[in-house]
Length: 438
Image (tube, rainbow, N blue to C red; front, side, top):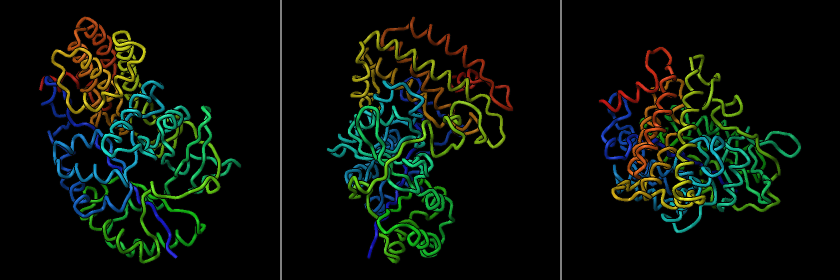
C-alpha cells in the first residue's frame, strides 16, 4: 500500500539591489555579481523546466519572485502557476519575525497573504517562517490571517506530555482562542537531502528513505524540506537527481510525493503540544541569538558586531514607524500591507508623498532582513541591509520630510560609526559610504 511523502523546497534570495533611482545601480556584491541571476540559470529555470514544481511543495519569497519577474518572466510565470496547488505562504520579506513588533508582523504577513491571493485567487493554508523562527505572537498573527499551519523543525515543538515532537504534526492552542498546526520536517532526511552528493537517487532512497518508512507508524507522513538551491546551484545536475527521485525512486518503495496542502488530517490525527518560544531551525542556542548577538554558530569567529548592527536597524525601523504613524495615522500598517507589492515592484514615488512614506517603511523593514546577521562576516549580506536603511531615509525626503530624514540619519549614522567590523578597520558607516561613493 502506498504512503504519502512531502518533499518541500525553500526558495529565497535577498534583494540584491535597492530600487530608489539614486541607488538602483549599486551592487551589494564585492565582485559586482548578481547571484540571483546566476542561481536562476543554474537552479530555478531547470527545476521549472523539469516539471519539479508539480511534484513538490514549495515556498517562494516574494522578494525573490519579484527578481525572477525581471530576470526570467517565463520562469516566474511557471512558479506563480504552480503556487495554486503546491505553494505555501511566506512573509513577503525575510526578517526574524519574533524580533519584530506585532504591527510589523501584521504588515509583512498580511502583505504575503495579499500577494499569494493576487497570484492564486486563494488564501495560503500553510506558512514557512523565515528561518522557521517562531513565537506565540507570530502564530497568533498567522492564525488571524487565515493560516491553518506552519512548517518548523522538530525540536521547536514540545508534546503535551513534555516529550519530543517525534516529527508528528502537532496542534498548538493560542491565547487568542484559535489553534494552528505545527508541521515538523524530518531533520535527518532533510539534512541528507541537502548535503548528500546526489549521485544516485535509487541508492539514496534505499539507504535512507526505506529505513525511515519502516521505522515510523503507518499513518505518519514523512515531511522533508530543504533549500531549493541545493538542486543545481550547490550540486550540479541536482535538478535531474530530484526529478528522478520524485518520479521513480520514491514510488519504487511505495512513497508518493504529495503537496502539504493536500494532506487530509482530522483533529484526532494531531497530538497536542506547545512551541519552544523564540526558536528557529538554524540556531540551537536559544532566544534567536544568532541574529542579534554572539553564539557558537559563529564557529569561533568574532561576531561582536551583530548586536549593535541589529540594534541600529531596530532603531531606524522603530523611528520610521513613528514618523509614518504621525503622517498617515494609527492604521498606517494597513496602507503599508495593502500597497506592499505595488511599492516594492513599482517603486516610482515622484509627486506621491504617501507612496514615498510607505516605501520608507518597507525599506526599513527590509533593512531587518535576516541574512545580514546569519553569517559570521558582515561582508556577506550586511551591505543589503545598509543600503535599504539608507533608502528608507531617501524616501522620507521624497515624502517632503527632509529635515526629519536628516535628523534621523544623523542619529543612525552615529550608531553605524560605532560598529567596528572584525579583522578590519571598517565600520558599518564606512562600508555604507564606500558603496554610495563607488
